Length: 544
Ligand code: N01
Image (tube, rainbow, N blue to C red; front, side, top):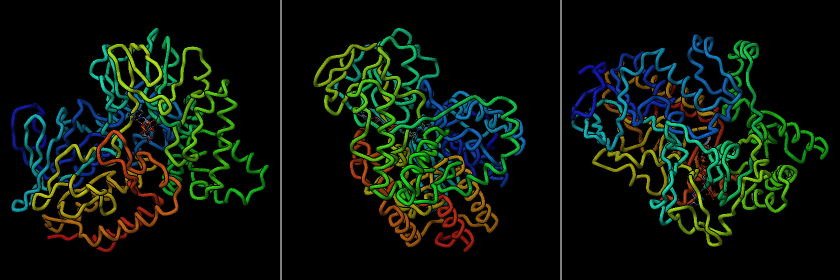
């Protein structure tokens, strides 16, 4: 059956393809484009009803980039770069979703995407050298190659408070937001969680809610986003600099426009240091985090210096000193967790309609039919928002029953931590490739995605040109890469802190132990390793 077959579901069917891609987000869409160029019959299986992945599911109020828009879009299509106008330096979710739909339209991608197709299991068939992919609705597909494009932060997690199902009002997880707008005007609203999603939600909901109560367990260090609109003449100027912008992203540590300052914190006189931090605080985007002094994330004293500076800013911005203290992290230094970027977030706590509850001191005990009961008080709410995050990096894999050679389950294999070769291959899982899998360079993620998608396309070109029908990473190559991944994370202050970046999520069984969950070296290093494998004839990947 051809890949151009009508996408009607849910009739049980067994279709055969050269490649199946799971997920129609940024990575899946680009992978489809590249696989078509290779002439591979490809089917993309997408759980949602539209394209966009992260930008399809995360429609919560205030959701937007915190990479500069023009550093975030695809770089591979000059025509698209010439046509597309970003309207804000950090585009809001609806604009990004529109952008990804434009890409899908332009390349007529939807004819190869099957929507409402959530993958339940994928089994490797050694005799046939094929993957069999089973959908939750019972549909079956087979393919020679399997590519996961399932995202790093795509498996939302809920807390397990007693009584959650009894709450009478609507409740939402930020990562599973409904398509219909939610009206907060005049409502009593609770937001649980103060990570990047919580912060963006809180500052938006505070504008209209009658009362907003924020349940904060661990404060995060937040810094100003400094968003602004992009007038047409500025967009025209940005457009002339796209080559320079993407070149810059290729050269920086994490593919952002910002990269570490080449000096150490205390090599600079105090006054100059203060001026530099003030400058970063006043600038757009992640500069304060990834463009700070180069030792800020490895040297404890350097980190304390920057933390003190940011704490001072919080104290200046929040009028009630007790509330300010509650908002200042005490158990981790600045930048050792992902820094949420904010717009008047701290000033929200000066509003009379906003209350901050310390849910470490007074934990949530249960959700009641009318609100939330903590160890100290009972609150009434019309709406509860769970901004409680994701089972990062691993969760999207665990939701699918991947079975490799001899029936080995990926979930079991990764029980004590994921293993991979450059985050893209796993031994015992032949013909499977992962985009943005564990131990990927993440950072400004579209840049990583483009690199990975092109690496996968080049590899599949190599494979198909030679009539190779089976490939598998060797355990030795995986071991060597993992040793590098572990070694490079040594000495990072972030490794001493619980967060999704160290694989911790108290809401998920088995995620209580800190691990090296992502590649913490530079993107350049990551690319050099992956390109080295390719240059040496895909060394460490057995083929037949
Ligand atoms: O999730 P999080 P997120 N009881 O894990 C709290 C990306 N992103 O969705 O810290 C009470 O950071 C939890 O508390 P604690 C970005 O990479 C990007 O906000 O565990 N509280 C924490 O406060 C980001 O880092 C953008 O003590 C509970 C919060 O919920 C990543 O996604 C925008 C709880 C979870 O924070 C994840 O961000 C948004 C419980 N049982 C997100 N369980 C962009 O701008 C959890 N919490 C592109």
